Length: 245
Image (cartoon, rainbow, N blue to C red; front, side, top):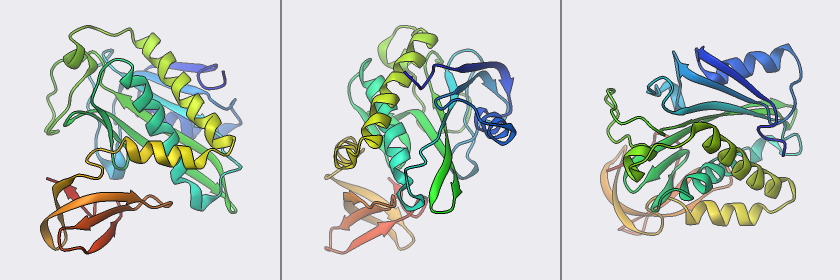
């Protein structure tokens, strides 16, 4: 196994993605290197969102990959790989797990994990990808204004061994990463769509034009969300251009 064969542990960091990026700038690390921390001072989500985590209760880690065979315009496949790997691992513990486009993992209607992918491009290809992952594991009380956090402990009623869960997540991501490297893109796309939160069901959304009822029909190769409105109009949305109600 490549992912997780080299683990660099920290008690406290600004963010594991920041540490991973600095290490990549200093020199080559083995592919699949994992940076972990018991606490992040400035844990980050998409577009500057903060990630709350009680020290020592959850999984906070980043994975360094070198997907040099992936073209820059296909980089959304890296997110599919990571999201599906986390989805697979959490699904082994509980039911009703979904991927909320583009990068959150939900149990029913509550957020249990978040993902932040930062890609470095060289020419037309990816030089490296840093996949930051936060999973709520044993935390029972959340103090931030995040609307719907949940943890494995809250869902299952039992504590989870963090080291064992990290191993399971790394193994699950590696299976998906190998599928990408072996050309199984259609299967990854199919599984990602089938795991999507609110896929092919009518729900309420809000975009720049206001509230509407729509159905998620697809995700483009570049990662845009495709929603059909009740009036038949089909629109594509980038991240933050549409909200789930």
